Amino acid sequence: MAPTTQLHGACLCGIVSVTVASKSNHVGVCHCSMCRKWGGGPMFAVEFAGDVDFKGAEHISTFSSSEWAERGFCQQCGTHLFYRLKQDGHYALPVGLLDGADDWKITEQIFIDQKPSYYSLAEKTKQLTGEEVFAQFGE
Image (cartoon, rainbow, N blue to C red; front, side):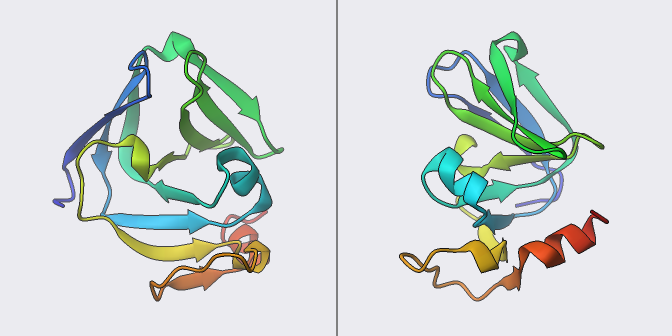
């Protein structure tokens, strides 16, 4: 995937769509208890260069899941749309939200210390504990 590839996606009902410029083909996996509760398993997330452009944004609801972040979803169908840091507006979107990109690569797992034993990923990746993640962001 070229560094400036435009990617598109939409929620299940199609009322909310998104366009982003790719930052890389890297997927990060979050094993924190909130991501697992939100999606029923780990969050496979991608980050982007520049703005995230939502059409149908009036149909997005947000939930303040912590002091530092919120999660967005479609009001109509419930599709998970994003995880966003409140302070700087940094977005992580579920990779499954995006259309047709097959060259994603899992490169990092975070909150590895919260990963339950009932699943594991075969990919060899960088692995960070929750404490190491917070240290990166100065929390």
